[in-house]
Image (cartoon, rainbow, N blue to C red; front, side, top):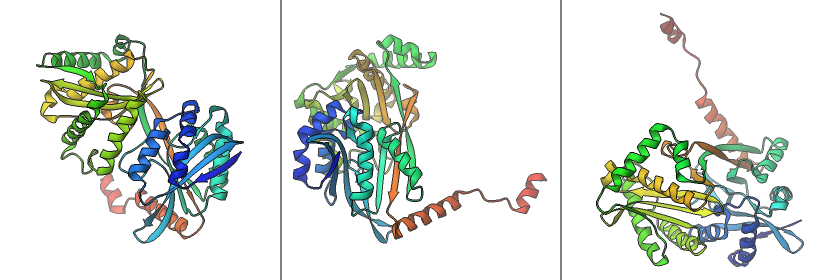
Length: 377
């Protein structure tokens, strides 16, 4: 197996037919590793970054891809550190399920070859920072072996818990899987909303409607989070440009799932997701808080889950963010994990020092004598 490194936009573009073919036959094909997401992300977020796409070939056939880029950060606000990171990470839109894209029959061999090449033949980086690797993926498992061999230079980072649910064949079976209280709450709120003037639920199914629907989704999301967070989505030019283009790309491939809950002829809540294979994904949503008494977000989600079941999906994936409102609908969980790999040197030593200081600050302090006496008084 041979590993090449693509470092130009022209080389990136030349990979498209191979990338799309690999995406269809991959062992675990994440939409976030697909051509559309990766290439559009680079178009909108790649400025100031350098491509480092690892391409695994067996003979003339491409059997694996690991899309990375190199950029320089300031460590501790002082020293430049050259980081190697996955394409899709580092902007203001958060993907899941990154790592490598590879042919199903080649997964273990590709993972090992990529790791060996990264450690021995890709130069110019001081810190490799992989994130959002499915915990059971061949790449994550192969890194475990490397981690055991070089524990000083590698470390696991925090895991993310992702909520999902296996979908039954019909809506009634899904309802029966819920607690009695949840079942009654969903039914009551749906019936109440149905009595509102001009109440309706619809899917955006025409290309000409996407831009207006996108604008309304962005508006509703900002309304929903106004004053609740300092960093809402749908604000930066990159985020808006990327997701508008992404919606059109998903629509062209039959993967976009964009829904509106309407009252009086106007969308008061919207859902943005996508389908890949038998999996249905929830990415973003928003609703008008002026209608909060009608629980539009919850009513909308119920309709979307029913629509996913009706079109034959087998899993509903809530993606990143272990939030309580997601567990209202599903309780199963899976994990993604991350990894840091250091080159020996000053940067590694400084990060080690930072970790030690952080651990010391977090450690419980022994009780003072007067505290103990007070507790026993």
